[in-house]
Image 1 (tube, rainbow, N blue to C red):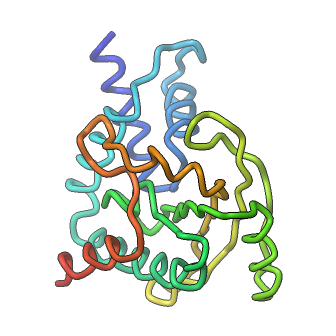
Image 2 (cartoon, one colour):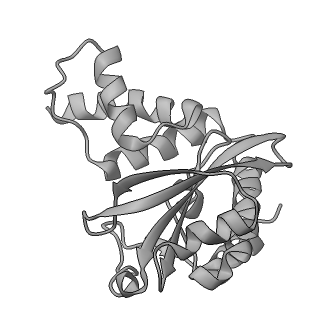
Length: 197
């Protein structure tokens, strides 16, 4: 069973790195591609993240660092634009396992949940709104934007997950690997400084 989960993680890791699919969707597609039952036990996200890191080291080592820096710089731009909403970055761009196919996930902590949407309208930014599971399993609004990343020469998905200000409490607890699960713009700038070529 453990070996099977590792195989699923390896196939899903390729899908994540090459196509930018989210972990859940990549695991489901991997199972389907491998001809297994949809009820097959899936690897957890930690195992998949480790497999993604291995895949990147083997197949994307020459290009991934520059792609990651470009995505992080684009995230800083958006965090600066939305500074009043206390933006924090999470996911692969924050943790360093992003490729050019990876979307950027920013978490906004707002006094009024509609204020971020109003800000995008005021800035003339087109977005799509949907509901997604939030930090604690509750449903939150996600405002999705296609932003041009000039360094990569293509558009990147920037997803703004809108939380109440109270949700910041407990949001910085370490994850299962002992890492901060998200960071503010100062922390992201520090990562960029540390990874300059």
